[in-house]
Image: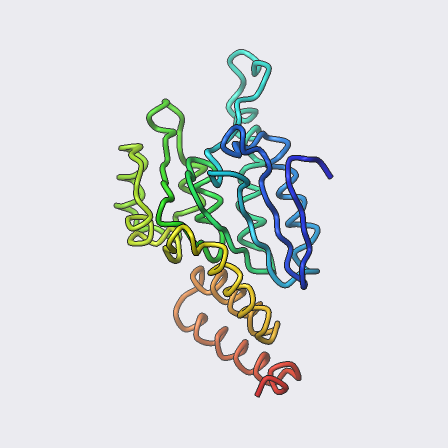
Length: 244
């Protein structure tokens, strides 16, 4: 395990803290791979992931990489150069354990994408969100892919094309975060949310994630039948009966 992340397991909850506050927690490609590996390795073992950034910001994007890419690489080579980013987004989405993101400051580019890809995102009232790629002549579809099922298309395209910084109120209005918390209360509210989810039967917590991720991709009748099956299966489990 590298020093790029602080990893703590507490009461079946895996806390992952991006540990480069000196650069706004900008993440290098090896870090993105490592985050994906952690989620892939642990998601069936833990109840929750909690993703944070050390210091003042959540994550200001991807870190500048040393060394130059090959001159005029072929299109298919360029396509695979970004696969680790798409893999990271996908692993967060497909994780059996729900992912909570905690945004206290800036979340830009890749950082905003991480926040949006999480299942629950609590943001400080001092948080700032942006997708700056278009302003730097970088195609922003990687970030867009993390939000395409969360943010209305007109709002998403506007944010991409303008590259403007947006408030947490705006981020909440378009659905890219879950709630806004006074900055001084952020840790307390996160702890309360964790306590609530840990205190509920695990099958129910996991089933909500499973249904939310998969039901949107199927037609209504199949989504209803999927809900019926999960409802019957989870409510008949011994853990749910103990909860009653």
